[in-house]
Image (cartoon, rainbow, N blue to C red):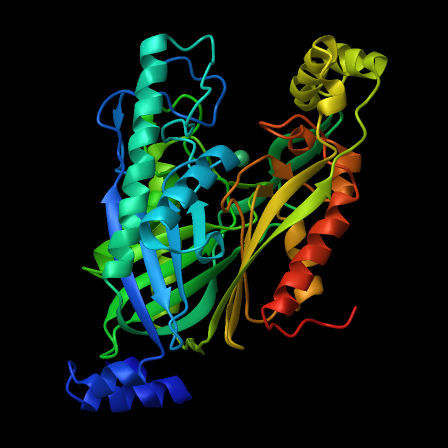
Length: 465
Ligand SMILES: [Zn+2]
């Protein structure tokens, strides 16, 4: 309780007054700015299953290192505007899966897409996420069926989770702050063979840890949403145990420190950021503990109030793709070109052979979500594997204060790289995952302009251009 006495902001005083009124009184409910509902479901697979993230893995999982969860936070402002955030210890939802999940949630709750935000932690030690068309020839039929069954079940579980979150809405007080964590490094390393995945200590990494605190009106912690802009790859391709990786361990740490509270992880712009070091379960545990401890430190510090109203926006940035290279150029890429681009070039050649190259997309509709909490906080929910190098660009475009940048939301369709990285090359320039195409350098402008317009529309004061 001490922390309420050392703080002096308005929300604290409201809280203090709130605590003098009997808890169940309608007056206390009327005073609370928000109603928040929470729910969780364990999504650990029941048996061996193919894990996603490393092409080198050649067999199903062999056990469980740590359980996987999906968690919901439903939120309602004083005007009755509602939204649901769902976080999951999974690699990511591509559009076909994310859209199906959001449709299932919309059907059961009456919410629109704008009001539903999905974020996966991008752990590389969780089941393959796909709803149909899982046709990897190297995977036996029975194992493919296991994956499809898991995912079909998952869609139902997540829709029920959103319903349970909304059914739990209770008066709540929100506040937020940021911390810092040390294990995140830029992974784009320049070598004499070009840019490779490695460790680049001089490169930019976003080490901030945004923390949203959800209290009941009497000041008891009910939930915390926190972020970190780091790939979920402390466990490497030789790991065959199911795990939420460092982010799973961080959530566990917080939930142990605050019994009964729900910790939810939202990954940031981690496309070019890895944990350091990598390779063992002990490392993942240690990084999870470091992140969790930092969140707990922020929770007990001087947090800023988060007031309403809540505005939720969603746009599709039509990001331009590079013109399809000629057949000769594609053949050159496949034979001698940079390895990350070979996969996309090969698919383009196949489309050419099938006569469908003209039908290849010229743009990709990148979903961008934005939740505006009054004048206090803007949560940007970018889709795709957005590289860390976007963080300074977005801070410039939106203003750096009261800003929370999340990525991997709603649709993980490929790496989202800056124009500079496209020019440099490297793994992240490999092209889209499911559609066929390479990003154009003009995509950067489209993304920044769309985010800025969306923020303005939602009521954020953005700097003059
Ligand atoms: Zn990734």
